[in-house]
Every structure is written in C-alpha cells, then in structure tokens.
Length: 307
Image (cartoon, rainbow, N blue to C red; front, side, top):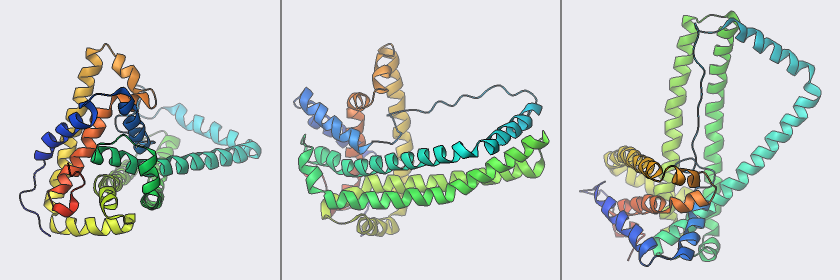
C-alpha cells in the first residue's frame, strides 16, 4: 500500500505522551527498574547513549616520524620470535570474544521483544514476553548474526587494506600520492558500507521487530513486509532516517545539559551498567515508541500500540 501524509513530527508528541503514561502515570520505582531491565537487555552490547568512545590522538610533528617504521619492525620481529605462545593465547582470546559476542547478541535479540512488549502494552513484565517471543527472538538473533558476519567480511578487508597502505608509508617514512589516494578510497568505501549496515540494523530494530511482534513471523518474513513498504514509500523512510539524526542530536544536547546541570552526577550514573539504562529510560521509551507511532501511519495492520 502507498501511504499519504506520512509525518515524522507527529510521532514526537505521541511518543512523549507514551513516556508519561508508561513511566509516570503512576510513577513506581519497582516498575521503572523492571522496564529498565528489559531496556538494558534490548540495548545490550550496543553503543548509543549507553557508552561512548574516547579517541585520543597525539600531536602531529612533521608527518610520519622516522621512528614509526623502526618500531613496527621491532614489534614484528618480537612477534616472530614468540609465536609459540602468542598464537595459542591469541586464538583463546578470539574464541572467548566470539563466545561473549554470541551470548550478548542472543540476549539483546530476545530483549528487544521484552522491551517492546513493555512499551507497547504498558506493562512491566519480563518472563511473559521472554517466553512468548522465543521463536521471533531466536530468528532475530540468526538474522543479526548473519548481518554481523557479513559486515565483518566486507569491512575487515577494507580495514586491512588501509592498515597495509599506512604501514608501507610508515616503512618508507614518507607520505606518497598513491598511498594517500588508496587510503582515502578505501576509507570512503568503508564509510559507505558501514552506513549501509547501520541502516539495515536500524530498520530491523525500528520496524522489522514490531512487524514480528504483531504477526508472529520470523525476521526474514518481517523484512519482506518492510521491503514492500520501502518500495512504495522510499522517500518517506529516507526522511525518517534523516529526522533520526535530528532527534539524536537533540537528545544528546539534552543529556549534556542534564549532566552539566547535575555537576556530572548524571554522567557518572550513565557509565554504570544497567543503572545508566535506568537513568536513560525515558529516552529509550521515547525512541521505541516513536518508531512504533511512525510505523502505525502506514495502516491499522501496523499499529502496535492500541491504547
């Protein structure tokens, strides 16, 4: 179907009202912490406002320093001389990291349905949705696993190529035109591919999960339904994605104001696992409700929130 008069601003007010109804009418600490636990599960292992990345770089002093190449050479020599223990330790770390990633991915996939259940039905429940949406949650886990592996297959060679070119320039202790162009080209490709995978992940979370929730279907079938909507309303969904950037900037600015106003007390709470999610619960409920109200504009068959 082709929807008309789709708005990205109308769901803002509706989502704010949903936050009030779910979290403040009435306000209940126990209820808040239960829904917060569901939100913590849903966003487990994801970035967003639950954690940040601190990139620190040193000052540049005349391009690539002469000691970088020598340092890389010494490091490579050390690795070759200690392969007997570096290889098994490295493999153990990789296996452990993959195992942790799989567990986190599975928990968050199941958690997305528990959190959606709380927001959509205005209930503070964990066990009921956890048991009800086993099939849908496991299907989402498989889809996200394939998506993550596909992203690795695409992104790792690009990252390896960029690393190799930078290493070669470091070895020669000078920048080169072809090297810089190669790094720039691979970097642009990496950015484009990264945006593509990020959009796929966001569309899955914002729309495919609610479609699964409504229809009791697997993730692939949910994507088929969404693709039919995208084919007929691509412009509206592009506006939606662009407006998400505006919302993210506004929410980030609001969080900064709150952190400064509380003399960084709120900021300290935000970095604590689970507790940070509880503090940010109004933001997370708003985000979840916003996508649901937006989706509902495409017809009654897409209405997840009925009250």
